Image 1 (spheres, rainbow, N blue to C red):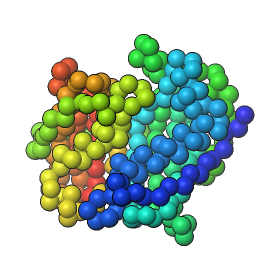
Image 2: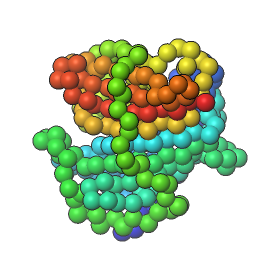
Image 3: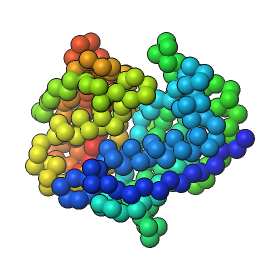
Length: 247
């Protein structure tokens, strides 16, 4: 079976906007993941298809670039397609359009397969490998390479993991990590600048009852780039690493 691109329609809701009336980055990432779910469902490799086999999808990395943010009640289309495969890494790309078919943003992502009982990553199973990757659009540059390490935090918050932070995989949903990373930044940055790019790597899972420590600091003197690190207070394990760029 050959893969094919999918497209999903969304309307920006009032609960998904910031004080400017624009969709938030976590909301946009949620749209992209919903579009990915619909596309994999049509290909017979959705999360539900995997769960029947004791497996699940996990997002390992996502790099998003926004050119313009949609506003409240705007209708957008999210196009997504499987863009490549490298060993256990499965790549998926996204493009976001408004009703006039103007490109608002784009993203590339990396996915892995996990055993839901052992909580361990596994080789890509044959029933997924049987879906031939035929990109519907030209692939975006893969998200590769390491991010710079945050050396000394200038901003820090503790986030207790509650019931509504947990997803179908019984661990903290990835959009919550993104939200926590952004919430840790200084108010003047959030009010005065616009998030242009985010590159986020998910390294380990956190579960109900944990406390996540979110730390951030500027990467340089210009104040346009910030580094982020989220760790488990209980184990000290690094959960997430990210870099954000503001304009």
